[in-house]
Image 1 (cartoon, rainbow, N blue to C red):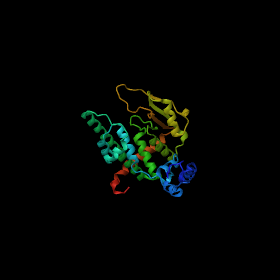
Image 2 (tube, rainbow, N blue to C red):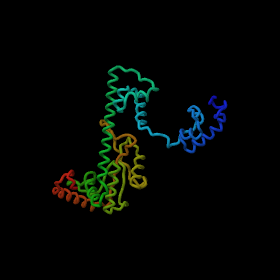
Image 3 (cartoon, helix red, strand yellow):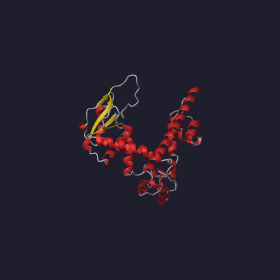
Image 4 (cartoon, helix red, strand yellow):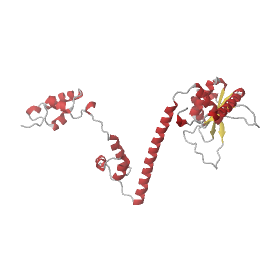
Length: 296
């Protein structure tokens, strides 16, 4: 007695059996459950009954090595040897062989070229490790800040202005409050500080300062969106001429020049800023505990 479908036996009504198997599969049953329910004792028959029907999600076992497998295949396609992949990923050669056996073998290189490639890959791996360490350090440091108090914002703003803002000289007493920076985070803190001081936004005037090779209109739109005003309200852009003897690195699509923020009628505010800074300089002499002591 044969078990082939269509030739008699318990699999004679193959299409009817397949309909029942598909229905059970779509209800979420596993292969074993369907086999027991329909009394199918042949794997090839079960395969045909369930052909084209994906397994339910709960039967799929996550493979912890899936990511390693994909990375190994990627490196193999780049021409890496088994030894290099093993060092980079920390997995066995037998696993690597299984994962990449369908891929073409890399072309043989001369020893010097192979050594240079290996050194390059090791350096790239080292850079990736350093980048991850850098990211973790920054994230941990950021979490140490927490919520900023009003006094902390006030002190930060004073220091920020004295580092980046316009300052009077004994020979040039202007007492203007003007701030220039290219970092959107710095601009955000500065504006929050002005808000804290009660400086109305109507008293602020904005201007872009950018090299002639930059996207002037794009920069204006970017800074206008950041500070929440219409670009048409900006003052005339200051174009910086390029010195052909210098090699500029602030280029590319992310180069947006600097934003200049001026406070109208700011003489009194400037005097207070200068006084606040003087007070901070005088007060710091009494601080001796390092940050690591926890006495912040």
